[in-house]
Length: 375
Image (tube, rainbow, N blue to C red):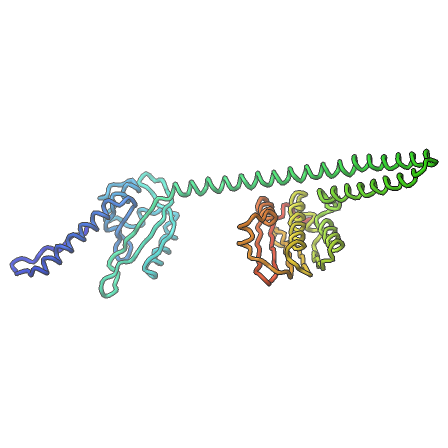
């Protein structure tokens, strides 16, 4: 352990020198106490980092040894064999940088391995030459377990979210079909009945006007039903993602006159490799993006590009609108953008929002493709 230098005998010592010696002794004892009683593992290695000169009790307990068993032992002894080569590279960084922190794996005397966080610092003399290295080691097994549990919980939440969105889309599909088929047929039958009544009671004064009004209202109701059913689940989406996005772009252009360029040279290939649920995710992202542009962006032009590379679908939506600060918008109740990100992440994808005030906005989406491309 660190020891105070013995006083030089038979020579007079000035009061100041004695005071300095006492202060030095107290500091050394304090450092020794901190080293011995620290709750985390500490070690002092030789200047070449080949030998463990001193280890504290916590370091020895961590590895299943008595302190004496590790003093003078090679540093390699506490590293897991498979981790030693990488550890040597990190030790070299300690030499180069003076201080370096890295993760590795250590081994106990019983052969069991455990993950550690190592923080090593070079101690130099007054000439700048290294004299030893102080090493702090923390067992991060519990941290790894918590991280793994959080990752598992996140994966489960994403799976649940994907299932939830799939169930919602299935329900929308069912409602849209029932509205189109059942309600549509009922309204068509009612329109025919009104026509029949109009002919039967044509002699009644004002009947023709009443029948015309009812038929006009029924026509409007049928139009609304078709629109609602289409919004719930556009029938054209059954023909593939590209067909659905083309229809959506045409609808937006018709309704608000927004200039939209759609580029997708691999439309059929993309549709072939996406599942129905994944295609719906991308369609809803385009739909929500265009809705946001119409409501908030004050844009005159939008570019939409889709392509697939390296088993991923890439979607980019760029507008020339007023832009915004993504962090500020997402911090608010921005359910549209948050919903898009949630949908994409639930299927293992990523979404990036790039924007700033006055510079428009770009939304980049990557989504893994789940089917092999067939020629």
